[in-house]
Length: 170
Image 1 (cartoon, helix red, strand yellow):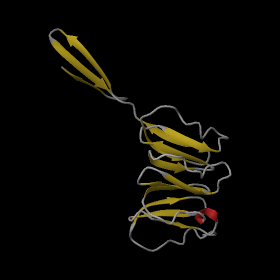
Image 2: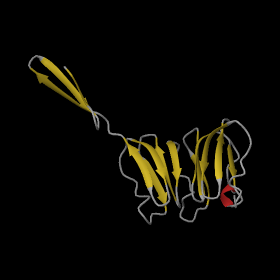
Image 3: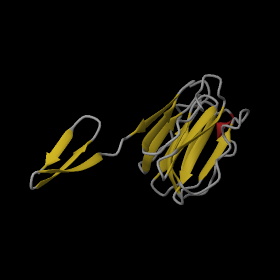
Image 4: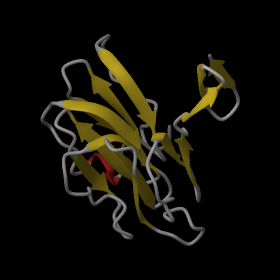
């Protein structure tokens, strides 16, 4: 607790929490944020509401608003706390001097420090979850099923598959 990070705010109306480096953040059911620390992460924290998701990073924080826009604050030496423009974001993640965002079309955006390739976001869509760590970024991508249509004698055969299972209907 050298920086006040375990001085918990009282209340029972919290819906999400996130722990960063020397600070913490919580999302309340009214869409407002609570950030606590004795270091700079609380400086610039938004005081309005309408937030639906949060993530506390090493020195920066990101919060996602209900309209799909994001707000960032905190340490910004590599641009990691600079929110990306637009209103099509569904998730945010912050790591050590880098940040990630998942867009509503399933694509990724990454920015900030890239000394270990952590902002080399893969190209494509169908991403459903993101996370950021010390010098790494993670994303889960689902592959859509493949549908095949064939004819077997007088029968039409439909087959579809995902990554692990195949299904056939005749």
